Image 1 (cartoon, rainbow, N blue to C red):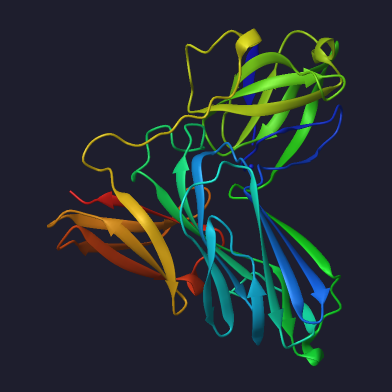
Image 2: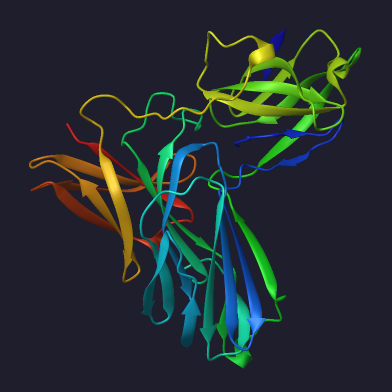
Length: 350
């Protein structure tokens, strides 16, 4: 088998025979917002079992919700945290529920009209997250700089408004939050005996598994592939038609893994990762205060710490340094100048 390079972005799944299109990245969270009438709104939050994270905790769920007059939705793990006009929110209280799980919140406004919040500048819903990366998370083969990362995401949803601001949106709106972006899968590669390869884009050096099927139920492992960023064209000397008419590519490991299990036992195997040594930092959580994300750090006196805001591809967007004076410290970032979602990680400065 051979591997060739050509010239794109991140991928997760697969594509149909002789086709091209978009492969969905794994959905991290789904928010379904529904206008029930008489000023009542329902927000159903479903946290998916995203394999890129060994642990994923939603620590805060807030809605830009004007003129609130009633609410319900407390549960074993969540409690109503009150409102600070125009925001209303719930905080995570205790216990880490197994994913997937669903929580439903109800809020009532004196306004009986509604519009779609845009998902920017806190217009819509806001989620705060504490995340532990799995070993397959792209770009993390060399280890992460902090034990965990925290995240901020602003998503669109239905919210109450004055009658003149209503936009004619349907009474139900569903939004899927993906912490890794969707990827366009380019094509299957034709050969002398039919289809003998795949062309996909992926921005990281990773180990992937090519599979084929005839019915989308039983998948046959075909080959391990090492990606060649930004675009990989992989081919073999036999027809892929022997494995079915439909194919997919799944992420097995970040980096170029060796000593892989035989193909008949191959599975993607997320593992927790953290960089060894003194550079491990822990971020217990984060809060929203006056439009700022305030990050809590677990420190030791005299530590020089750098906190970085990064996007889904690991690109550093902003960074701040501080000298800790005790066992904890805080640092804040302005959310209006950052994308959504955005993540925060910490590292010790030598």
